[in-house]
Image 1 (cartoon, rainbow, N blue to C red):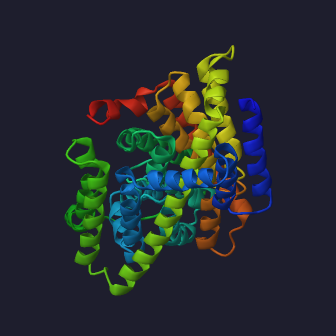
Image 2: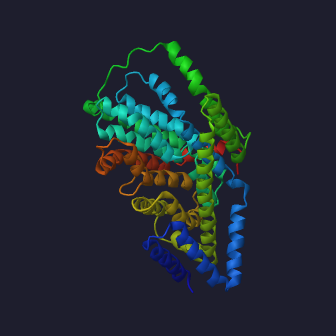
Image 3: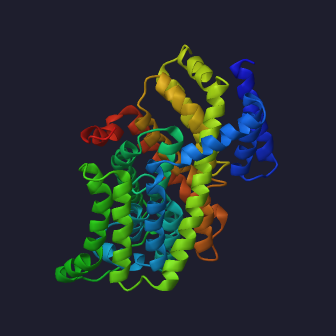
Length: 439
């Protein structure tokens, strides 16, 4: 059969299974079993599927995933966050939209400590939203900054989704983790700029209030106690990788150990925390490894049928500029982001898009960075962005889903602006990876 027929059959079966309401992982598993059985003739195909699953998971490059997840879970379960937020808030002074800016600053900091957007939104939402509303903040300025900054966990190391993206797309994980640093800070800066500008134009959104004068000695003491130690943990992950001293796996191990030591020093590493952290980390890691195995087998089916090569050749032969095809890919991802969770989007699109990107001559690291920004948008895109429902769960009882949707829209715009800038200026994503010796 022609590759076009195979492509239609594969995605047709996948779509039908998804419409039945099955979990996305189970849908891919069924497609993989049917595909391997058909392509390789019976039992031999199933044996190839088992070998493929084993080979895709028996890889040292996947080791950062459970360690990054462990870091985030220790931070979340030990509840170190409130003290850190309080210290950051002391340095904010009387800036317009002070608490909204505090959300972005704290979200950026937590992203470098947790690596999970859901945990970040839950922590910041439960901690800051009640205080914002008590100070008279309107919902667009109390909910929106937390939704926007929570997604930064996908764009600042340690990002488990960045590792997952590299594993599924067979892209250098080291380069992705380094490459997302500048874009992540760019997104945070655009969000902060938007908050200041909007609060200056509409002061009623975030009324100013007297925060009192805090002595410099108190700020420095609290920073040394709470911020500096966590800064060492961030350096253990990002700094050691950037300097070429540690691989992603080694840096993740240093970060996980550092986070556990930090929680112990603050007397928060109780047996209950250890129990919850272990169970949650194992559960999430198991789910992600199943996803990686399924996605790798799906990629093999596309390769064996000629669908990947055929689609890449077709795309490269279109009478349009290659960047137009990249734009079209981003529109597809944005559309899927309104309907599906980010992991499902990864599993469906990466095996198709990455061969096309390489065929067109673009950097796969650059595309991965843009892709991660796009799925960060998906996480807060109405109507099914997962972070939206997390925010609704931790927000005050009078908050409606319409309030959450409305609050998310401006920050979706901020991320879109950052994505456009990186598409126009690729060095924003490629400069730091180019300075390292990673391959």
